[in-house]
Length: 78
Image (tube, rainbow, N blue to C red; front, side, top):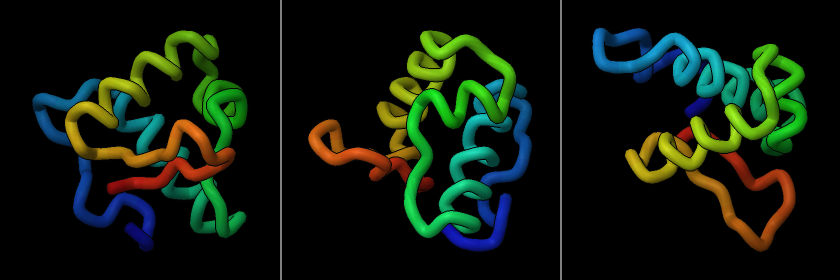
């Protein structure tokens, strides 16, 4: 998505944790040129690995995040 936060600012229906995870994905991708791992995200947002995984899966189901199960570091903002 490019510039951090453009197009997906806080809304009343998005939880704070979802926002933090989406922002962390975008910032990581922008600064490194590839997507973060689930562990990278967990460390960045200060949540348990399982919690981050559940949030990312939910965001993926909502069409807000994409990643390929068979390709490392493919996570990005949709």
